[in-house]
Length: 264
Image (cartoon, rainbow, N blue to C red; front, side):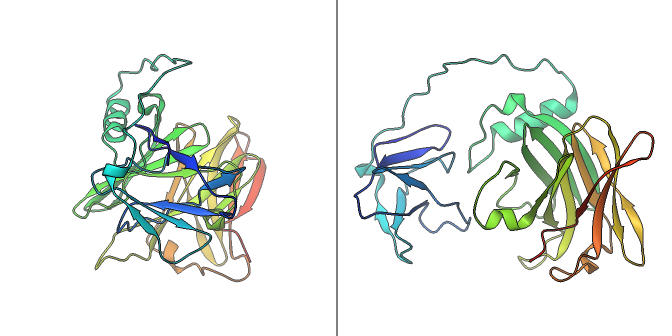
């Protein structure tokens, strides 16, 4: 490893026989994406901040990795801003709260937290609240309540990419959606909300249409949408499409229909 940054990017050089690599924290519970390896160079963009525990490198799909102590690593690279962007002037309380949450976020570090805009929010349970935020095709959700998640806030990337994360997303021309889990008990949860982004300003409503059940309408704010309901978890995880996201314009015309989730 030759450098790591304050935004959590980790990079270095690799031997010719290394075709794939994973960079992890020791004993990390968070599943991380595969590191890019090409032409003898590897990079894990916005992975995590290297701390006193060091890191682990796993190559070529090996189930075991090599722990690299922090003393063997270079010091953190100094940040250089080559294209400064002024912070968006918005004194709204929701913006200030979201910015504060993102600034204080643990792994992965969130770049330009002052540029994120607050989106839809809702009371999910009597003791749990969620706030969405958006930055381009990135969607973040932050929950507050009695049982804070170890992965909160969570950032989802709707840009084209490979890997298992795409199995949790449906991306259309006008909207894109994924699933978030909440109401955790005993370290697990089967309670689902549908969250996503709205790419077309003409979209006025999004509903989840379900066979033999009432439609569930989305809250739309700041280019994001949120659908939550007590019976949403009854939908099957696999099989024929039984639920569809329907986006309509201000005249009520259907602009797009997407399956509730990607089908095998």
